[in-house]
Amino acid sequence: EGLNKENEVIKHKISLDLHETKKDDDITWITSDKTLIDRKSVFQAHCCAVSSSDMVNRAVNQLIVRNSKIQRATHNMFAYRFSAVKEDGREILIHDNDDDGEDGAGSRLAQLLESRKEDGILVLVSRWYGGVHLGPKRFAHIVNVARDLLNDCHEKGIFTKQ
Image 1 (cartoon, rainbow, N blue to C red):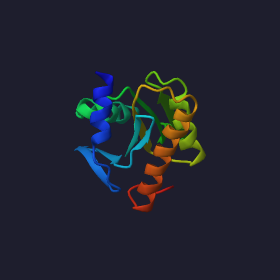
Image 2 (image 1 turned 45 degrees about the horizontal axis):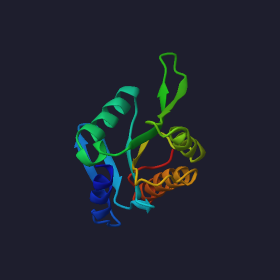
Image 3 (image 1 turned 30 degrees about the vertical axis):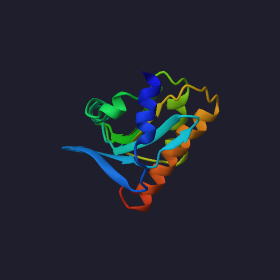
Image 4 (image 1 turned 90 degrees about the vertical axis):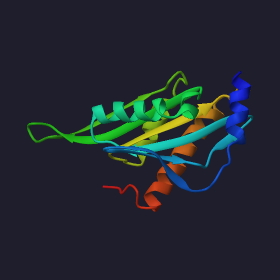
């Protein structure tokens, strides 16, 4: 059953453009059609702008629940980072990540956001396991597809750095 799912994903036509996956009030997901395939494992990045923890929860739920292809992913790991102003006027940085069973992947995405000084961004990477263990190479793939999508979004003016 898992390999059938992988074959279905691999057969998906890959284009080089970004597209909106879903739009819901204040949440617009950007999904890269540039998937990375290594030994039948498929990696695909998604990102959106966020400004609160509630928005992060709604965004992740929206992407996964409303997209059956992403629901079938073996792992949907993510990280987010945004600034908020406390009642006393102090600005604080709020950030977190989730591995979704791919130990260490969420923290690597969080490191990517931190090193790029991203603000107001949630990045999620879906992985469909292809049946062959990739070892540490999987982390490079996860970070690379996320970095490529963020670069594309900044180049197209979808997100701007503060």
